[in-house]
Structures are given as C-alpha cells and as structure tokens.
Image: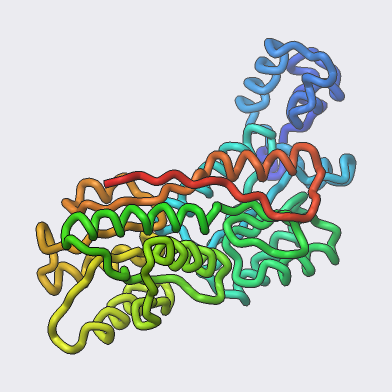
Length: 338
C-alpha cells in the first residue's frame, strides 16, 4: 500500500455503509441536527460511536459551504489569571459545546491592538459570533465585525454599537462600600473616608464603581478626598507604587480599603504584609471580585461575586434567538460578607 492509501480519511459515505444508515442521516447526526430529522437518540449515539472509532473528523469547510454557518464562536478575553475571567471562559466553552458550537478563546492582555488582531483572525475562520469580553474599545471591534457581517455581543464592558451584558457595577460597589464603612465604624468608633484602589478611570466598570463608592459615602455625610482615589491600573507594580506614594510620610492610617478586582487585591495584600498591617492591624477590606481561596489567606475580606452564569445565560439567549437589539443588560452581583 502507498502512504496515501494508509492515511485515507473516513468519509460520511464510509460511515453510511458501516452503520447501514443513509449518508444524509449520518450527516445530520454528526452536525447535531438529528433531532430535527426525528432520528432516535439510540441510533445517533451508535453512529457517533462508530464515527469516533473510525477517527472521523467533520469537514467544517464543506459544512460551511452547505449551511452558510461554521458553528464556530469566538471570545476575546482580557485575562486568564483571575477567577472571574477564568470562570467566564470555562462557562462559555460549556455552553457553546452544548449547542454543538466550537468555541475559540484568545487572551488579549487588555491591548487594543491585540484585540483587533484577534478579531481579524477569528473573522478569517468564519466565526458566526464574537463575544468581546472586557475589550478596551468595544465599538472598534463591532465596526470591524459589521464589515464582515458577523454579529458581536459585548460582555463585562459595554459598547454602543452592539448589545452589552455587564454586572450592575454601581449597586454592587455601593453595597460593598457600605459594608466596609460599617466595619470601619465598628472598629474605630467613627466613619472616615475609605481608599479606593485599582482600575482605570476610562473604563465604564471602574467609573460606575467609583460612583457607587462616592454615593455610599455621601449617604453617610462623608466626602471622599481626591487623594483617596488611587486609580492607576490593575497591575501589582502600579498598586504598590500608588500605595507607597500615598503613605510616604511614614505614619499609615487606613480606615478601610475598597479594592477594584482580585488582580489589584494581590498587590494590596503584598503591600499590607510588607508594612506589617496584618491580623488585627489589617484595615477593613472589600474587593469587587470574588475568589473562594481568599478565605484561606487569613484575611477577612468582603467580596462582590459577579454572577457569571446569569451573564452567560443572557449572552446565549441572544445567540439562540438571533435577536440582538442594542442596549445594555445589567446583571446583579452578590455581596459575600467576610
């Protein structure tokens, strides 16, 4: 035998002979439309098992030419290294595969150029949808995709040209700030303005959390000084530098800290440990993000858990119905008290 004969690929027609089922029925089973053809699950499972044993791989390019759909869905993700974005990626993959869609996810590191480059690559693969998660300029992604006729859904950060699914950042931040203020008052006997650390003022989420933070103070008759707003990005280096500059006079008095994401929390906890502000000396802390491992660190930290399942349910409701009206849907987060 020649090498070409040895690696000859199994076709739908080969499977039809092996299973004694028509080629069209085999195709329907393998592309996930067998229920519409009223094919039994028993038969579908048998055909899929034999296809797997034969090493059959669906020819997606040929399928695309026939159906005008690739069943491929893309997601742009800014980070992998925190619980929130990691859980978004995991849930997105699960829900896509439940619909017989192939999920493609790429991390763009909050880099606008990488975001556009990744979107272009996904368009070249004929994706049916792109979910732009936490992108820096979501409308630029949407404009690019509209030229290719591919719909976009914004997740985490909103845009104006495509439907957006986000957390209710304002209400979540307001509740978290009230919680930290209550802890601070209980410890020190009087309420004082807290510090807000992390994030970017140009981001919608940070702006809304700041608004909730300031309004929670105002409700208690407190005004937040500008120097208490240490909003200089998320990275550990920026967090440490902002705290060092804020308390370079020597004496450190922190009535409480609102931390804007678990990415920033790592920098805050490192800085507190460096200055021996741990155990009973640790100031009241709250974080707008959630990670169950925080409770094992010995730090009493209230957290806001964003409802990832509800957010992805809203995303796939749009995909399932193919009704993508403009507007923003806000999903309520959950306050997890210390």
